[in-house]
Amino acid sequence: MVSHGRAKHSRHESLVRAAIDSTADGILVIDVAGKVRLFNSQFCEMWKIHPEFLEGQDDNRLLEYVLSQLEDPAEFLERVRGLYAQPELESFDQIRFKDGRTIERLSKPQRVGSQIVGRVWSFRDVTQRKLAENALRQAIRVRDEFLSIASHELYTPIHSLMLALQMLSPTENHPPTPPDVAARMIDLAIRQVQRLAKLVGSLLDVTRVDAGTLKLAPETFDLGAVVAEVAERFAADLSRSGSELVLDLSRGIEGSWDRSRIEQVVTNLLSNAIKFGMGNPIEVSVRRVEEPTRACAVLHVIDHGIGIAPDQLRVVFERFVRAVPADHFGGLGLGLYVCRKIVEAHGGSLAAASRVGEGSTFTMFTMALPLTHRGDDQ
Ligand SMILES: Nc1ncnc2c1ncn2[C@@H]1O[C@H](COP(=O)(O)OP(=O)(O)O)[C@@H](O)[C@H]1O
Ligand SMILES: [Mg+2]
Image 1 (cartoon, rainbow, N blue to C red):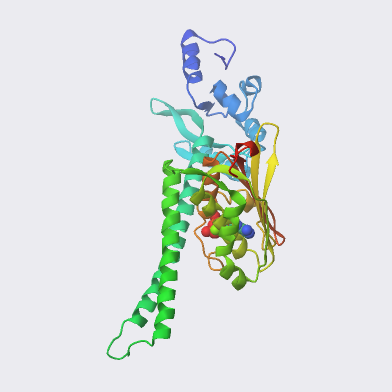
Image 2: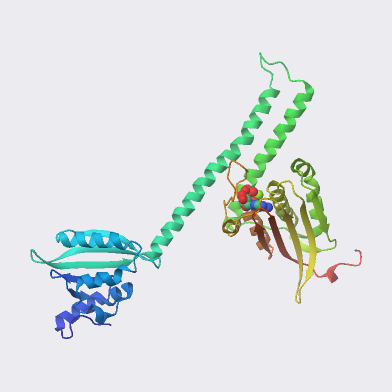
């Protein structure tokens, strides 16, 4: 225990000092003449003050010493002066330090009987609590934003679906729809239902990933062949966006993977590349990389579109994160989150590199089966 205050003190005084040294708070007592009467080691640590400097110190000099540590020294000084001007006042507030700490400050008059003989200041470091509060606030903000985007995203296909069905349903003032229009409406309705199913599917996936119940059904397949199949499904989207798809798919790279989940990853990466690719060419490759102890399958999806800013790049794999304004691009910000979890569940990794205005590269690494595993029939 560190003992402070005047050099000689009674047993009673020692007990008091021992008691205040055994609290979590920094404590400082100033008498009516503005002199330091008592303090504990926590106070010295918090304010980075040597105990000898404090001994019998004048409060004004103490203030001068501590001000440089604060984010807003003027406000601090004003409050302290205000309290000394009105000795009977109590106060409770927070002080922010330049080094990022937040300290709660409680100040009360020290009374002996009815007489005020000084002022007691106690300080509590609440930095960790503050950080947790801020993280929580941020999480709530992200969730609220997500709810607003999700409801909008879900409503849009419902609205189109409703319109298509209304066109198909004959009413008094609207004769039966000609067959060619009806066929178009049915087509539209199917597309909207598919869109809804996709949105609900990603919500379900997030629930599964977060609950740790994402189940994999591994089978052995050729990654290049599956990527080629997925790519074919994007023919219409590619021609709409104007992006040319350049495939470089090595065949014979096999692994023990969940086929539909890997398809989902490739689908997501490719749809992002088309969505954010500004109509520029998109390159997709599958290669085999032999490492000393294992073989890896490496998938690259490269676009030359809008790219992702560095501060966004750090968080694009997080839940609900969208690095673009909602009114420009749709999407729930869940695709990459789910993709990374799927790849990690396979023991692999999914990473992104990007430059704003130049494009993005997404790379998936997963374990591949050794070449020798293939049977004689292959
Ligand atoms: N290829 C890409 N180019 C530029 N930005 C991208 C690309 N892929 C993803 N992003 C950014 O990352 C965010 C998250 O992507 P994702 O999780 O797939 O969600 P969503 O597509 O639903 O917005 C996107 O909103 C976008 O801002
Ligand atoms: Mg996406």
